[in-house]
Length: 375
Ligand SMILES: *Cc1c(COP(=O)(O)O)cnc(C)c1O
Image 1 (spheres, rainbow, N blue to C red):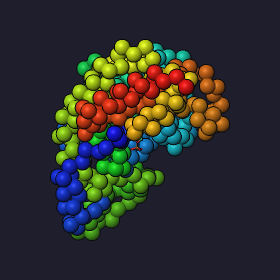
Image 2 (tube, helix red, strand yellow):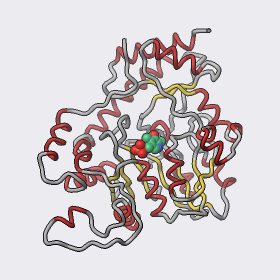
Image 3 (cartoon, rainbow, N blue to C red):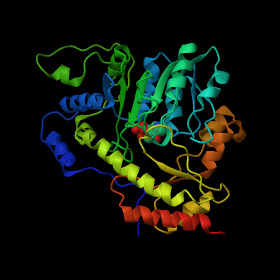
Image 4 (cartoon, protein in one colour):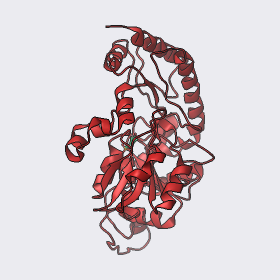
C-alpha cells in the first residue's frame, strides 16, 4: 500500500470557480478575493480579513502594523516552521526564543516574563499542530507589559480553547493556505484582526504602499493613486481566491473527519510504551498528527515508514539548532531543552480528510512495527 503524506481535498466546484475567473476580465485582487475575505470573516468571527500571498507575508505585515522594527525584540517559540522566525527578521527586529511546554510543544507562557527586556515589543505564539497556545494567559502577560500579540495560525483555523478562538485575543491572526494546510489554494495566506487600524495598514502594505488597489483604479473614471508607505507585493489574487471561496463551508466537516482519523491513531498507539502522544489542549484544528518516539531511533523509524510506503514528515526540528540560527544567534542546543527534545523525537503521520480508514489502519500497523524493530 502507498499512503501519501498529504492529498488535497479540492473538488470540481473549486476547479470550476478558477475557470470562471480565467474566463473573466479580472485576474488579480478583485471581487473573488473580496468574497473570500468576507466569508473568512464569517467563519473566524473576526471583523477584518486581508488576503495575502502567504502566511509569511501575513506575519511580516502584522508585525509592521504593530510598529515592530529594528532594535525591537519579538518573543517566539523555537518549535515551529522557520517562517515564524524569518518574518521577525524581515522587520529588522530580533527574535527571542522561549522554550515550549514539554507535553504540548506550545510556547510556555509561564516562561515569557524571564525573556522580556525594555526592547520587547511583541509575542508571536504558534498554534502548533492545530492546538492553541494558552491565549488567556498570554493576553494577561502581554497586557501587563504592553506587548502586541501576532498569532501564527498556519495550523489553526478551526480551533477553540477556554472559549477563545484564534485571533480573538491577539492583535492579528496569520493564516496559511499553502498546499498541505487545512484550507488551501496551493500558495496563499491571510491576516485577520478586529482592529481597523491594523487592517488598514495591512491593506496598504500588501500592495506596494499604494493608496488604491487595482480594482478601485480600474473601475469608473481614471483615478490617480499615491504611494503613502513603503510596501510589499503580498496581495492574494482572484485565481487563488477562487479555490478558497467554497472550501470554507467544508472546513468543519473536514475537521470532523480528521478527528475520526486522530481517534483511530490514538486508539492504536495509546498502549504502546515506545510512543508518546502530545497533549491536545482544547478543541484542536487537528492539522498535524505527530508522535514522539525514542530520539535514538527516530530517523530509522522515518526510513522504515518510507520503505513501507507511508509518507512521513518532521514538524519540526527545533529552529535554534538549524545552521542559520546557530550561526546568527549562537544558541547551544540545550538552551531550549524541551524544544530540542521534541524536535529529536517527532514523526508526523498522514492526516487529511481523504485518508481512508484502511489506510489509517495500515499506517498504524507500520508505525507499531517500526517502533518495535530493533536494528
Ligand atoms: C506553513 C507555515 C508557515 C508559512 O506559511 P506560508 O503560507 O508558506 O508562508 C508559517 N508557520 C507555520 C507554523 C507553518 O506551518
